[in-house]
Amino acid sequence: MNDFQPRADAVAVKDGRIVAVGSVEEVMAYRGDGTEVTDLAGRALIPGFVDAHGHVMMGGMQALSANLLAPPDGGVTDIASLQQTLRDWMAANEDIVRDVNLVVGFGYDNAQLSELRHPTRDDLDAVSTEVPIIIVHQSGHLGAMNSKALDIAGITSETVAPAGGVIRHDANGEPDGVLEENAFMLALPKLLGNIDRDGFKAMAVAGADLWTRYGYTTADEGRATPATAAILQEAGEEGLFKIDIAIYPDVLIDRDWIKANVSDDYKGRVRVAGAKLTIDGSPQGFTALRDRPYYAPVGNYPPGYRGYASASDEQVLDAVDWAYANGLQILTHANGEGASDTLIAAIRAAETAYGNAADLRPVLIHGQFLREDQVDSLKTLRIFPSLFPMHTFYWGDWHREHTVGPINADDISPTGWLVERDMIFSSHHDAPVAFPDSMRVLDATVTRRTRSGDILGPAQRVDVVTALKAMTIWPAWSHHEEDTKGSIEVGKLADLVVLSGDPTAIDPESIDTLRVNLTIKEGETIFDRASVKEGALHYIPKGSGDDPYAEFLRIATVENEAARSWPKVSTLASLADRPHSGACVAGFLSMVADAAIVSREGLN
Image (cartoon, rainbow, N blue to C red):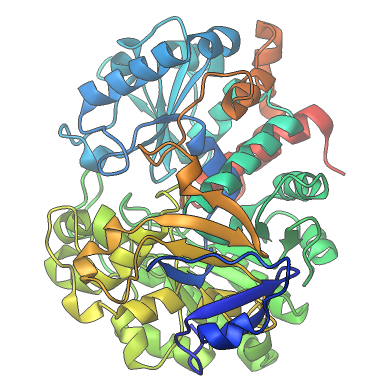
C-alpha cells in the first residue's frame, strides 16, 4: 500500500513497530540472537485492515445470536429454514435457554426468503410459545417477536405505535409480531434490559474478537451513545481488547460528551475519534431518502414514494456547523440522493464559514445512490467517501428489481467514478448488517458480482490494489492515522495480516476463496486460523464453562417478572422523539443499550 515500495520480500518487527522492509538480505541484517524468523511459504503479507465503518459492539450481539442470515453467511432461505435454525440453536443451548428464558435470532432478510415477507408471531409461535423469541432484520429497521415476547413487551391490539415507529397488525387487528423502527427499539429493552455493563462489555469483546478473524487490527464503533462509548472505554481500561477501536458517538444525543472525550490518542486501545450524524435510512428497506420515486418498492407505499429523512435539514446544518466550529471530524450516514444533497449543502455552508475540511476530513458513509454530479461535489468539498460495495452482492439484484431499477443499479457504490477523478475512498462492511468479512469486501469492490451471478455495473469495478488501499491506507487516512497504520513502512505499527494467497496474483473471481491465516497487532499474533476449528464463519457456542456467550446471556438472566417489566415508558419516552435512522441494527441496539444503562444506573 506504499506507492514508493509496493512490494518487498521481508519485514522486520521490533517492539511492535516495523523496523525494516526490503529484500531478505537487507532485512536479515537486523537479525539478532533472539529473533524469531517466519517463512510465509508463499502466503501474502499485507497491512492490517482498518475498519472504515462498522459497529463492533453490536457485531458482538450478532456473533452471540442464532444466525438467521441467508447464504453464503447462513442457511436461511425461507420461513421453514428460519424456524429450523431457531429450533436447532435452542436445542444446542438448552441450558442457556432455560436460564435466560430468551432467544435472539439475528440477520433475517425478507428479500432473501422465498415467501418475500417478514416472519410473523404465528411463524415464531410455531418454534415456541413458552420462551420469548426476538428476531432482528438484517437492515436493523425492524424485527419480529413471538406472542410471548409481545406479552412481555406489553404490545396488544390497543397499543399505540410511538412516533417514528409502526406496529403491524393482522386482518383481525391483532399485532402480527412485526415491529418497525422506534416501535421495535422501544420494545427491545423490556426483553434485553436486564443486561448490565459487564454484559455489554462481553458483547463488545466478542465483536472485537470476531473482527480479528477477518484481519481487522482497527475496528470502528460507527454510531455510539455516551453510555455505550463509556462501556467501550471501561473495557479498554480493563485491557479487554486486542485491537484498536475508534468510536464515533451520535452527534444528535450529547455533543458536550463528544467534545469532552474526543482524542487523537488511544487509551486501552479505545478512543473517541469524532461524531456521527445520520440523515436517512436503508436503501434495501426503502427508507433511504431519494431525489426521485423508488423503482418498484415491495410493500404498501404511496405513489411517488421517495423514502424519508431521519434528521431535518436544520438538524443537519446545525450538526455539521457545530463540528466545524469545534474542529471535530464528522461522519455522516447518507444513502439516498436526497440525503446526499442535504449533506453536501451542509458541508458547503460550513466550508464557506470555516474552510477547514482538509484538516477535519469529513466523511460520507454509504452514499449508495450517489449521482455523478454529487461525486464531483464530494471532490470539490473534500468530503471523503466511505462506500459499501458489499451491497452489490447482498442486495444488487434487489436494487435492480425494486429500489432504483436496472439502469441506475449499475452505479450503486460508484467506486469507478471515484477512481476516474483520482479520489481516495474506503470500503466498509457495516457489520452487523453484513459480516465483517474482509475478503468479501475486497471481492465485492473488485468484481461487483451479485447473488444471481451477474456483474452489476462493470464500469464501477476497480483493480485489486485500489480495493486493498480502500481497506488499509485510505481508511487509516480518514481516521487521521495514516502515519502509523495502513501500510508496511518503517516506523509504522506492525499491524499485519497473512492471507492464504496473494490477491493481486490470482483470478479476481477467486478472491472470496482467500482466508485470513494470521492477524498481527503491533507484532503480536492475535488470531491464528490454524488454532481454531474450521467451519461456519459465525460464532459457534463451545458449550463449555468458559463460553463467552453463556457468560453474556447469564448476565442477562431475568430474575423475575418484576425485573422484566422495566424500563417504564417514561424512561424511554425521550428516545421516541429522537431522529431515528433505521440505518442499521447497531443504531437501534446502541439506543437499547443506552436506555438499559440509563434505567439501571443513570448517566453521569
